[in-house]
Image 1 (cartoon, rainbow, N blue to C red):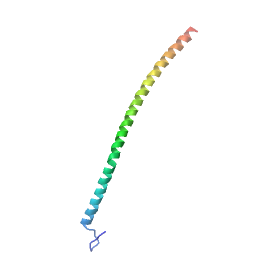
Image 2: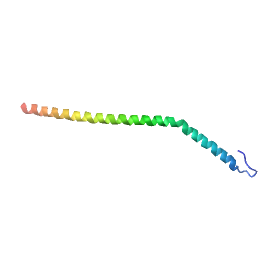
Image 3: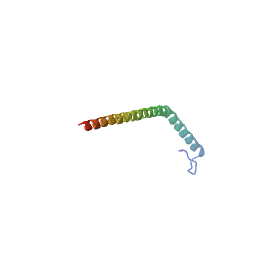
Image 4: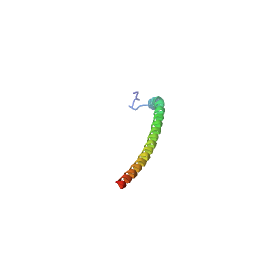
Length: 82
């Protein structure tokens, strides 16, 4: 690293290094932009699937409740007849 005669780094050198660091961060951000968009779409699809599964589970539980009610009524009827 270039130094002045008293051992201090010049502001120009620091500015250059900061500019290089800024360019690297911006390039990294651009590189990951498409990945982040794809990942966001995938998360939205997963959320839709979860909602569908929850709806199917709710419907299944209602059907099982209805079947249970019918079977318990049939069992009560059979129990009262014999």
